[in-house]
Every structure is written in C-alpha cells, then in structure tokens.
Image (cartoon, rainbow, N blue to C red; front, top):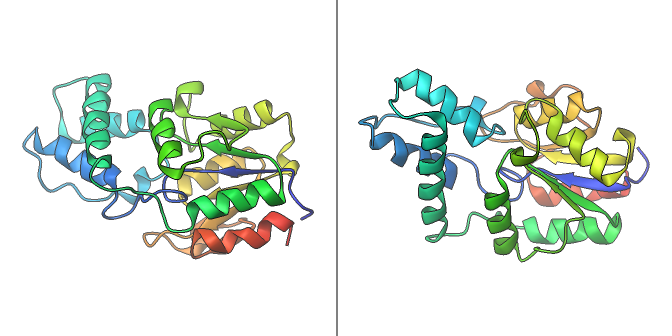
Length: 217
C-alpha cells in the first residue's frame, strides 16, 4: 500500500481504554445495579457499538422498565462522572495521533460514541484542533458494524477508500471499515483472536506499533 492520504482513528480501544476495567463497562455496571442487576460482565460483542444500541440490547436482555433514551442518558451521566476520577487515555495515543498528522497530513476520528463524548476525549488528549474530520454516531443513522460512520468520514474528507487507512480494535469496527472498503490496522484486544480479523492490513499489539503503516509499509 502506498502512503495513505488520511489516517482514520477509532476511539474506544484505540485512543482510550475500553477493556475489562474501562469506564464504559464500569458505567454500565453501575447503571444496571440501579435495577438490581449486579452480575453484568464485559460482552466482547458490545465493543465498537453505540451506547444507544447497547442500551437497546440490555433493555431486552434484562427486561428493564425505562426506554432506551433514558437508559442511554443515565449511562452517559455515570460515565462522565467516572471520567473525573481517572483519565482513560491509553499510553502513546496522543503521540501516535500527532505522528499521523506529521507523516500523512490529514487525520480523522470515526467513532460510535457521541459528540459530547468525543469533545471530552479530545480535551483529555489535548488534541481539540488536530482532527480534520470527526464523525460520531450522532451524525449517521446506523453506527458500527454498519459502514455508515466510515462512509460519512470519507465523504467529509473528500477521499476514496483506497486513499485512507483505519486504525481499529473491535470486530464491529473492523466490519464497518471493511464494508466501507478501507484498509485497516487492528490493535488486537485481549478478548479477540487474530483469526476474527480476516483481511486486515495488519494486526498489532498496541497503538505505537501502527506508526510504520502511516508510511505505507
């Protein structure tokens, strides 16, 4: 692959922690405890999906009395309170984004998170003005694993799938990027195996290992 014209970053699991002790999981667990459910653990299939989709699944799974919008708002309120206690930013994330900006020139953020969430994360990364394009689940009808978020990112960048490289971690995010036709480097989560990412450009162990691929290697 030649040097990409833009690097597109996912957020959760790529730039911030979304693992076993991540703030999303802890917020969901705290929310469910309000309804008397105290045995919820990480569901790997949730990684990469929007909070709206996840709350819809949990509402059906646990027969929760509130509607999806209420559950989503409650979860977000807990989540943002938890962010005040510790930063979820992963080691090397800011440096890698800046390296992409220096090497390639154009960078984008494409996430199933919300605008509010992304604004908070950009502030924690001290990268408020770094991204040329940002697309969240607020901007599309269908979040990952549908390709909508990546297709909208391409539209705003005014680039083709072959011009770009995606950095992802979740299977749902990989499916979304693959459906949009974009080459993807995967940061392998501990809950997944390499075999689940058939067709990925490369599979690496952490965010710093993606930098060589910014040069088209």
